[in-house]
Amino acid sequence: MPRRYTRRAPSSPNVRIGRDDRIDEEIVRIIEANSRTPEMTLGDMEAQVASMRVARNRILRLIDRYGSEAVRASVESSILAGEMKARELLRALPHGSFEIEDFIDDDGINEEPIRVRARLTVTDDEFLVDFTGSSRSVRGGSINSPYPATVSSVRTVFVAASDPHTEPNGGFFRPVKVVAPEGSIFNPPVRPAPTSTYWESMSYAGGDLVWHILAELIPDKLSAGHFLTVGATIVAAWTTGQGGGESRSQSWNRSQVAGGASFDRDGESAWCAVGGTGGRPTLLRGGHREDTAHQGREAGAQHP
Image 1 (tube, helix red, strand yellow):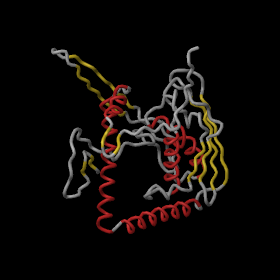
Image 2 (cartoon, one colour; image 1 turned 180 degrees about the vertical axis):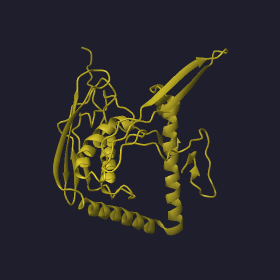
Image 3 (cartoon, rainbow, N blue to C red; image 1 turned 90 degrees about the vertical axis):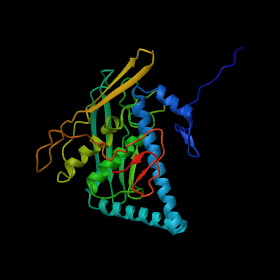
Image 4 (cartoon, one colour; image 1 turned 135 degrees about the horizontal axis):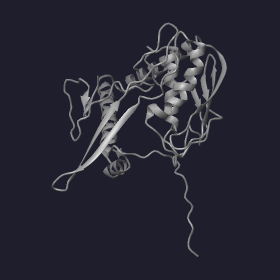
């Protein structure tokens, strides 16, 4: 009899794109082959790698100057200060449990409405958002929100509701807890579960549900909802030259949309959804540059 094999889901969806400061070109080619906008995708990926190199080298410079123990103590002190600040701000927020339920019209492919639910519980020590009861992940359109994006969305709203001018760190988000059942639209399985760019899928989570709850509780801090998208249009073209070589080009256009009104002013007529694109690094592909003046440029990353 032929041997039968059972496919098992991987224990972790994480795949390393590099190790020991070397990029795995085979992984890069897989990503490139599975993207409709490969130059944009690889550019973003390489910019992220470059930014991490900048962070690593700056940390090493601090260690060289002050020693590892002093740097570690400073980091721990900063994280603790962030947590204490968050708990101070928590005490000023309305306390209790609040629920909301809504429906996404469809996933862009299938016409069935998609249920989204959230329960927000605020105490002196915790800002808990529970998405239990939301729809299972969908296989049609790319509107599933990966769990990290869901968490990021909730954190965004927490900052907006508590103190939008704060400088959050890992400690600041310790009181923020997110429950999203595995397999749901807010925590989809590894596959098959098409996801969208971060401002689309995560907007349905904290960006709208939790925001809606808090906007009614603290209208002096939060405006009404937004358009849930930046209305981006990406046009890609493939052309073949006279010599038979193929070239690719792409154009990315962000169409501004409307923002909700607040208690003291009308909404903006041209605004961006939660998940703005400020502070983007500039990437110079194929090179490595060390700025001896330490002005924040290295490995192709430029910081504003």
